[in-house]
Length: 437
Image (cartoon, rainbow, N blue to C red):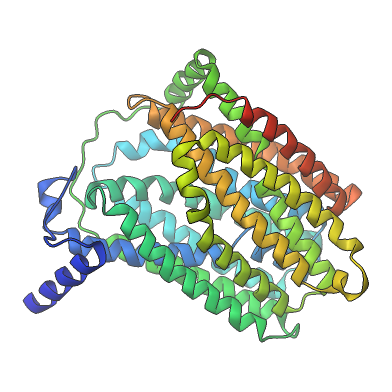
């Protein structure tokens, strides 16, 4: 056992670049000795979560599932809004509740187990569901999954801050992201070798693997050694909401930022429609889904270096440039149906545009996160983040419903043109934001 602890500490020191695994910053002294062990438990938990997120993606895998079962197009438009809103909307109400728990890892575990159950339900639906009823059951299950995701998200960040020191957390997320990215690329590569036979069965396997990822997440979280934390400062969600709305009225920059963030939703909302167009042109052949998973994984791996340094210089500029990229990608996606010859029936043009939009979407997320953190002060940052997320979740539901109806009436191509127009509004709004760096 002692030899295992020594080798674990040495591996931890190699991964983090530390020469002393007991070097700690801003975590309790009692958590310092457990940091190497907790580091690897966080690593396994994050690996399971990231892999599960990719294999049950509302931007890619679930639209493909909806196409296989023959669900209406307007339901596809609700996938991303429900997935994002369910995780964002409750944050300002749940944060105070979690604060009252001295050990928050059990909230994390509960959220992970619920997500695993929801993923297994989706796997069953991939085998037996069809039509509008099947689509409605998928959306209902997704509501449960996304609410559990929000619960785990808040608790995970709290436990991470209590058990892993500063200047180690980014390294942890980097390693887990790299490992999960490799696993996701491997899954996509396998799908590229498959044909359209038993496509529902293969998608069910993907979702079952996602469920196992969340089970691994829950098991690793349960084994983390967490020091009981302070329970002061917990308050009701309504009290937090009232305080946040008051800040929204006083801080015009914060109000303007949320307007720009709302217009930038076009990048997230466009992704499933480009995937759906690719499926319409190439059929339900699973090799097409595999190609999209692979290019999405590769795009995600290169996205952060593309935007990272730029955000440190001007997060406002990143938001503006990402809005420009969103408008271009939406117009490109809408124009692909008019490609000459067999190109219009190939998945590859759609895969290229999808990969570009994934990179752009990462810029949207990185830019608005950096801007919000830099804009808010230390005393009100948590409230600003929770309120902005809750407002975005509400808008996701409202706009998603409208977008889905428009797609049903006019088709995905016209919908992408509308989203490109929205992105133009985001360009103008982001450009008018003041610099905060």
